[in-house]
Every structure is written in C-alpha cells, then in structure tokens.
Length: 128
Length: 214
Image (cartoon, rainbow over all chains, first blue to last red; front, side):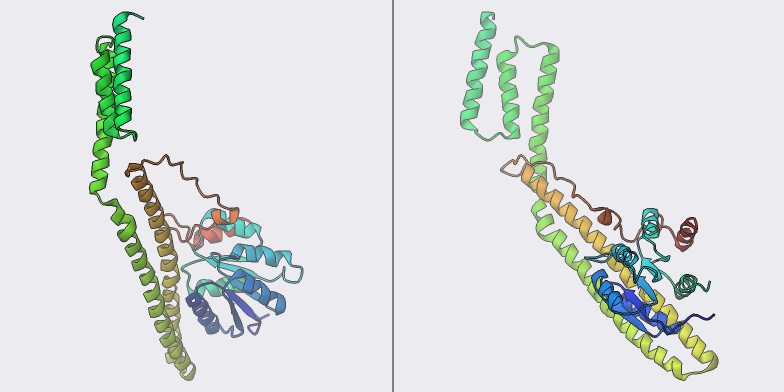
C-alpha cells in the first residue's frame, strides 16, 4: 500500500529557517499538506484542533521542548498513535534514550539530509 | 609566664593595637607588617621552625599584595565592560547575518524549484537534486546558531567570574559566598545542544541505539 502523501504533516521548530527547509524537503517528496508551529504549545494546540498523520519536531525549544510535546502527545488519547519524528542536534545517548522512553517513532540528528528524512518517514509510516 | 615572655606579649599587643587603629581595613601588606611585628617582638621565644613558618606567611602576604597590583594592571574592568559585550554582540550579528543570507538563498532555491516543475526529464531531475542539496546545506544556519548560543553562555560565565575577581581584589574586599551551581530541571539537563564532531553520535549510531530498543 502506498504512503498517503495527502496526509497533514505538522512540523515544529523555533528556527523559521529550519521550518522552511523541512517544508521544502517534504514538498520535494510530495508531502504538500504541511503546517508549521514554532513551539511545543502552538504545536499541541494545532494537533488538538486538527487531524495530522505525522509530527516532525525539533527538541530544543522554549517554553515547551520537543520532548515535552512528545510526552503530551503520547498522554493524549486522541493523539497518542500519531507518528512522531524528532529532528534535533541533541545527539547524546541519554537524549535518544529519553526520547525513546517517551515514545518517539524515530530520531534524526542534525545536520541531516533529504534521503535520511525520506527513509525515516517511510519507516514510521510502515513502508520501510 | 616568665617576665621576658610577658613583656613580649605586651609589646605585641601594643603594636597590633597601633596597626588596628591606623588601618581598620585589612590589606595584604598589613599582614606582612603584622608578621614583622611578631618576629621583632617574639624572636627570643621562636624556634627556627616557627621563624621559617612566619617568614612564609609574610611572603604569602607579599604575594597577595603583588597579585592585587598585577590584576589591577590587567584592567579587568575592560573585560566585563567592553571585551565580552563586544564579543557577544559580534556573535549575535553573525547569527543575524547568516539567517538573512540563508533566507535569501532559500528564496532563490524555491524559485529554482518552481522552475523545475516546468522542466521535464533529466533537466527536472538535475534541478531538483541541486535544490535538495542546497536545502540540506542551509541547515548549517540552525546548527551554527545553536553553537554560538553556547559560546555566548560561556562568555557570560567568564564575565561573572571576572566580576567576582574584581570584587574580591578591589578596594573593598567582599566576603563573597560561593556561587551556587544553578539547579537544572531534568528537562534542562538534557538540553546540551549540538555536540562537537569528535564527541557526537552520527545517524548510524543513533539508528543502532534506536534498533536496540526493538
């Protein structure tokens, strides 16, 4: 079964440049329904008010970090099954372990390339 | 107590009272003066070991006084007042300029992407591959921004420490308490930012770690 590329994807990052880069990379792999949030709180509000098939979030944001956003998503009955990819410069073992324990679907370390992004999206959406 | 010892004690107490009256604030060179007074008045009672010890204390007082003069000559005020704020501003400017440049590059890249949609075959593929590489490369701005933020935090720490040295060796010697380490939440302890390449895990390390949970 092919990936439903018409799904809504939420990208979360406090660097506008990164949002723009990820949006463009997603567009190149034909994900055109992309929404943006610049922090965890805004992302959570959008997730609760919409219907998203995938969340791609940075970790290092304030006041709500990407990890806290992930924890909120996993604690929410309606959202808890939503695939969640963390894209971050945080590359210590304890970060990956903490993210995994919180229920992250996959983890991409910055700087990343388009191929890694595509591969991880396919993997979490069940088409590896 | 034998008579000579009592006399020495009286002389010493008298000399110390004189010094205290003249110099209410303790300065390092006063320590030397006190030691000299002790040596002069108590020399008969002192052993060779005691004398050596007192001379060392006197030398220590002199060293502190010299250090104070040397630190004053460094113009440490310039470090907190000028050098560090200047460096911080420069780093902020780097972030700002690279952000502006990156956005200009991205804008041009998006235009090329739109052109790619009107092209066909190999040309379309080549154009898209080129824009993909540009998008990937532009993520440097996020990484450098985070690294610079870490440098600014380090500079601020240095600034605080220099300010404490000034306060300690300045005209009014303050009895400063140790700076408590800021308490971090478990969340904050995990915010380390980008790692240096020699210390960082790459994507394949992360993939292995993720796979180890399955």
